[in-house]
Length: 130
Image 1 (tube, rainbow, N blue to C red):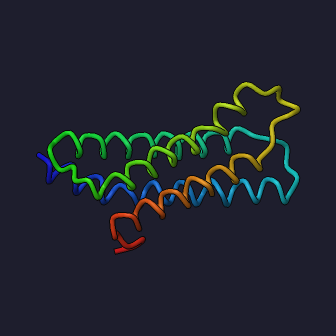
Image 2: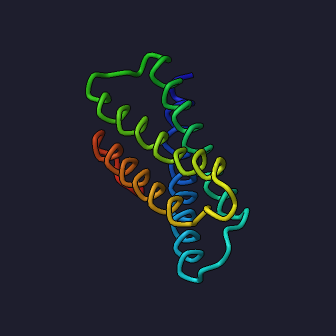
């Protein structure tokens, strides 16, 4: 069973990275074109946050299946930070009035989250691609 979680966790990272990259790109596009805030950025950003949380859940299942080693502690901390930072703009923008919603927080926090994901992968010696 732990092999399933390991393969799932390792393969699912590409979907998470793609969603984060799309969030950053769409937020840059929205901010640069001065478009009014739309539901697409909310959907893309929420998808990124949801995928990050699911990736975290797969990682926790992997840990609880008996594959935890002390060297993985830095990876776990970075992934918790990545999931939290991906969720911040989704939660904040949901509560703001429509006239105060902007694209930039989605892009900035997605970028912070992506940096944490890459740092977490480097902490366990995994390449970004491959």
